[in-house]
Amino acid sequence: MEDSLTLRNDAMAWLGLTLVPGVSYTAQRSLLQAFTSPQAALSASRQEVEQVAGDLVAKRLFDGPSPKLVDASLRWLSRPHCHMLTLSDAAYPRALLDTPDPPCVLYARGRIELLNEPAVAIVGSRNATPQGLRDAEALARALSESGLAIVSGLALGIDAAAHRGGLAGPGSSVAVMGTGPDLIYPRGNRDLAGELAASGCLISEFAVGTPSVAHNFPQRNRLISGLSRGVLVVEAAVRSGSLNTARWALEQGRDVLAVPGSIHSALSKGCHSLLKQGAKLVESADDVLVELGMITRTPEMESPPDRAVEHDPILHEMGFAPASIDQLAQRTGLDAAKLAAHLSCLEIAGRIRALPGGCFQRVANGVIK
Image (cartoon, rainbow, N blue to C red; front, side, top):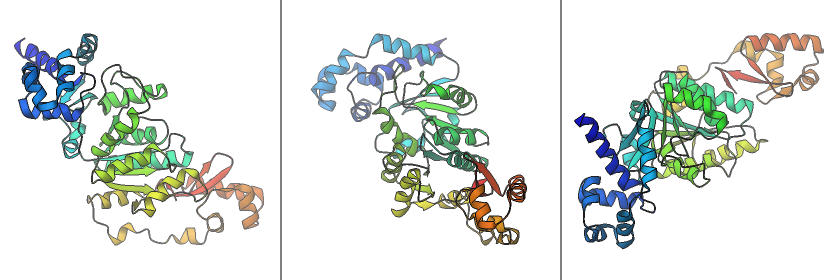
C-alpha cells in the first residue's frame, strides 16, 4: 500500500512539473538539475525558481497545471500496461538522452523494454504505391528478424507497412504518436495500434487528450530518429515529413538511408534527393545491417548472376520498371496466351509481382528491384 502511495505521489510530482502550460523541456530540465527532483522543484520558493528559470516560468509553475488534466493523466496511468517514463527511470530510452531536447516524461503503452533495444526507423509517404508498401513491409520484417525494433510514426502508408513488418518478427515495433497516448490517429490504424499495444509499444511525449495538431507531428519526428540507430526512407516527396525525420537524424548523428525508385515518380524525388546528399542506398535488409555495423559485407552478399534470368526473354525485355502485358507482347513478339502463361509461372516462382493496372515488375528476395 505504501509503495502504491509513493508511486502515486511520484507521478503527481512529475505531472505537476511537466503539465504546466508554457514551461519548456529546457526549463523543466534546468529545474530538475537545480533542485534534483520534481518534488523539490515544486517545493522551492518562488524566488528560488525565478533564479533558475525566470519570472514567467516561476509564475506558471506556481499557477500549476489543470487539475482535470492531472486527474485524466492519473486515470490513464491506472490502466493496464500504461506507463509514464521519466528522466530518472531506468526504462527511459537511453538513446534519447543523447539528443538535444529529450522530453522529461514519455507516456508509453505496451512493451517498454523495446525502447532500449537496437532500433531502426522506417518512414515514408502516407500515399504510398503498392510497391512501396510491399518493400517497406518486407524490409521491416527482415530487419525485425535480425533483432532490430522497427520505429515509425503510426501514419497511413509506409509507416503502417513498416509496423506490420516489424510486428511479424522478434524485433517487434515501436510507434511514436503525434497525439496524446489515449488518442489513436489516424482512426484507420486503430487495429494496428491495438497490435502494437499488445506486442510492441506505443509512445507519446504529448499529454493525455492532446488531439492531432499539425505542428505536433514534425516535433515527434525527432523522437522517431532519436530512438533509432538510423532512418530508412521508403518513398517520399521532396517536401514531406519523412525528409523532416531524416534532417533530425542528421542533426542527431544517426545514419540516413533511402530506397531508390523510378525517376518518373514524385514519391522517389525525396529519396533521390537524400541519396544525392550522401544517404546510403538500400536495396536489401543487408545494406541496412552493414551500414549500422551489425554485419560485415561479404562477397556472398553480392547476388551472383542468375543464368535462368539472363536467358529468360520476358525478364530481359521487362527490365526493372513496371511493364504492361501489351508492352511485353510488343517487346517479345509473343502472343497473349503464351505471354500470360509465362508470366503466371514467373509470378509463382517469385520472380515478378502483379501491380495494379495490369502491370508486372521484377522482384528479388521479396523486394521489388
